Amino acid sequence: MTSSAGRPATTPTVPAGDASEEGTARAHRRGFGVVAAAFLVLMAFATLPTPLYPAYQRLDGFPTVVITVIFAAYGFGVMAGLYLVGHVSDVLGRRPVLLAATAVELVSAVMFLALHDTASLLVARFVCGVGIGAVTATATAHLAELHAVGRPDADPGVAPVVAGSVNTGGLALGSLAAGLLTEWLPHPLEVPYAVWVVVLVAAFLGLLTVPETVHHDGPRPRYRPQKVAVEPAARPRFAAAAVAAAAAFCVLGLFTSLTASFVGGTLGVRSRLVTGAVVFGVIGASALVQALLGRRSPAARLRMGTVLMTAGLLLVAAAALLTSLPVFVVAGLACGAGLGLLFTVGLATAGAVASEGRRGETLAGMFLAAYAGITVPVIATGVALTWFPAPDVLVAFAAVVLVVVLVSTTLMRRHLRSPSTSPERV
Image (cartoon, rainbow, N blue to C red; front, side, top):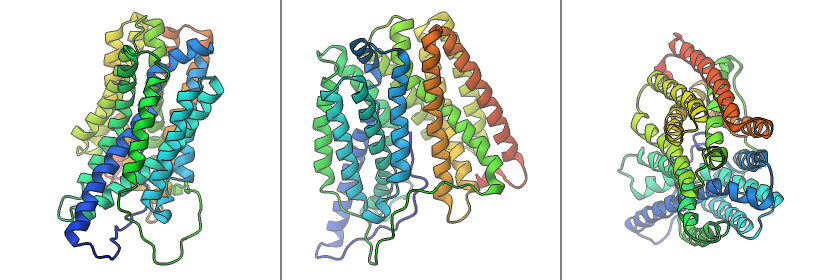
């Protein structure tokens, strides 16, 4: 789950030419559809390996902790892509960066298809993360600009809604697609990636036809990585929101990295389709509540997110102790809904405390905190599984994360109630 909220605003421009105004608008509307479809395909690829980790584990014989390290490689790759490449499209243009990111994902897909050793899996996941880190911000900005030119009289809020839905929906779709493609077909470690190689090639060819929306008349500015900065006076509010976002993403990382091991090992349900469906439910619930409740006040979303996350984590512990798949599924739905609400409030808080001209730098700090949550604690959980039974580890994980969620959200509510930071500002 990534966003381009920190991107500098870029006014879409249409280069002069002989095409009529309607022809230009039609090309941009068509481009909007192509970019949305390509964005969906790229995000789905990010979760395609999720149901397949036990198959890799049986093939290579590595312990469960390696699964979490392989997953964490993706998180580190996303961070690298976001902060080294995610803002480059403001200078080079949207289409070149989207094409490059798609090519990077294609390289990752070919690696997954041809190489199954542990080292190659680590590299392939990191490469995948780099491409995703570059594409999320760029595709969201491109969709907004294509929509502005293609439908100048339409509601400008449509493009961000489409981008958010495609982003999260793609992540949910990938694990489900992998489950469907491998449940009954042979060669489970090859078929999903072979399909995605074809789909990614099609996406690349489609992106070649999309209009560019960034045009510079003067010299291009020098490259620099995305800065990360928070004003000193805003750090207490930001820190509370960042810790809550990290805890939320920690739960997301747990479900997307270890669901297959828990469902297949502890619960004894060796079905890749079930694994894919569980992860689909977690991410899908996150997308759904953001769409349904996104216009509620920050205080209301924070309150609902805390309740849902608390219920979900208690159910994670119950599912581990009872070894119950239905309880684990409900836990995933509750956690997914809760983390979606908490993360949106975290992003809104970061945007509100950012000073003029430093919004991107502050939001970059929020994403850094979130992806630290999706990597480091998940690896620690994998290490713990080396020595302790899975139910005990999941109960301890749920307890620790629940304490962090309750403390951080309590601090966030205090800041929202303070006179200087009314909810309307966030």
